[in-house]
Length: 54
Length: 301
Image (cartoon, rainbow over all chains, first blue to last red; front, side, top):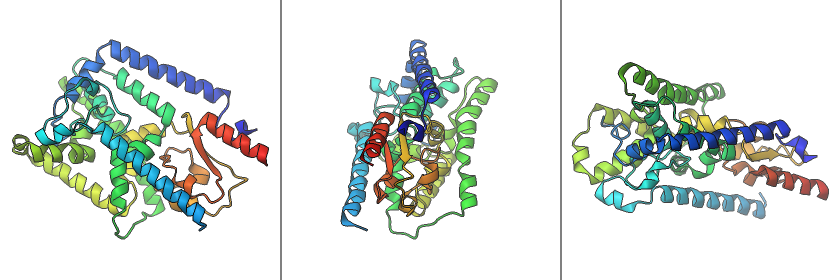
């Protein structure tokens, strides 16, 4: 009975699985295409925009 | 209010405070940076934390997802950030806005500011509801559209949200960096003073209104809110146990009625409503646990 009371059901489970799969695939693709280096290069320098200088 | 119930609310408050302090300290744990006025340069900066945490905070050991997203979107060679978007969807599907309620250091700062004993304000309902749409405009315009548009016209974009609006960058990044690094302080210009004004307004309003940045401006909250209904972490109000006493309404920092909006996009899953409920009608957890709790209650009834 609880299954009918919370936002649930087979369609929701499929949607979650789909979103998780898309998220994981995107992360892997992003890592393989070199996005980590872009994020790292920005992160290890002072972001002048963030601190209101540039 | 019975003593046991009061103790439960206090215990929840303490646990939440501890968790918020822990995430703030762990994600900004590079103490040396605060002394030298330099940002951390280790490889963990390639990873993004799920919450708003400026990567220019001298203590930050990982990157901010909003800043990273704008960097990649506005970068010379890329149009879309698969890595950062993938991470955001992953955090959203697993946790939803639990990130805002229990983990975000800037949310924690707003919670602390609200504890300052000053008169508390409640915005008129219509104005409050209208202003909540602002965060979607901020996310769409400042985080995505403008960096992409500028990149399309000039070749490189700019992180508009970080540059013109983000108060976390000023509080966590600019102020400690400039206190320790006079060379940076010498470059202060009009943009800096604009951002100081934004920070001052957010800080002052946070003393009188609960979580104003989360309610009205945070692009990350706007994004995670879209996942609240489908996330693995769920909350549930058991209507047969609800006494309609509205203790949950009074406890909600986002000004919601948990009976109706418990998994809505505005709920930050802080758990205050659950702790405040005298009949334990609100259950929360990863869905399996919620189901188990409900099944147990059904069999007991």
